[in-house]
Picture 1 (cartoon, rainbow, N blue to C red):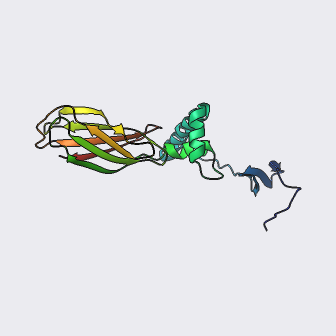
Picture 2: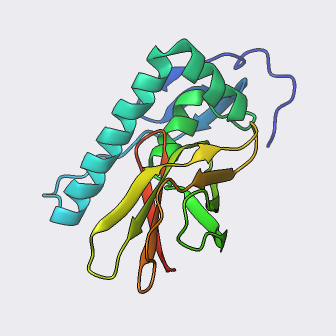
Picture 3: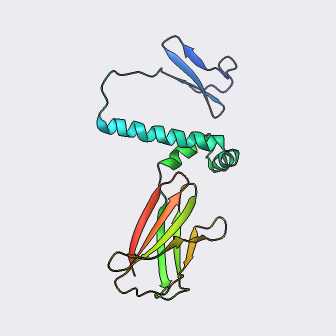
Length: 186
């Protein structure tokens, strides 16, 4: 039963013997059973998940150590979720490339390539690579972010190149370093 005015339990935290655990979450007292520890040897997959979570936790701690980044994550956090938890979740989610527009590029210098890339927190950078039919990189550089709050990135080519059989590689990176790569034929 939900207690609205329970001044005895308000703000309580800790354990009541081996039976109950009191915690504070989003300004509310939560009562639960204590955690049960199991004795077994973890599998290789379980160890990999633990290592990934450890790295995510390290990333979230570096976010908390940077006041500006901590505030940015806190501003993006839903009600009742800490900046730490939002940074932890961001570590596990790579950016998404929604579209690549090569309509204004025909192989000549000054052509533009537009990329629409998004992330649950922020896309840090977008790298464009133009690769010829033999696999050699013709041109590679960072795209320029659009107006703040926009997910549009634009790359203006520097060199003229024969793009017959060439492909375009777009790499989007977020703050934790997750990458998404999409290749498109030119």
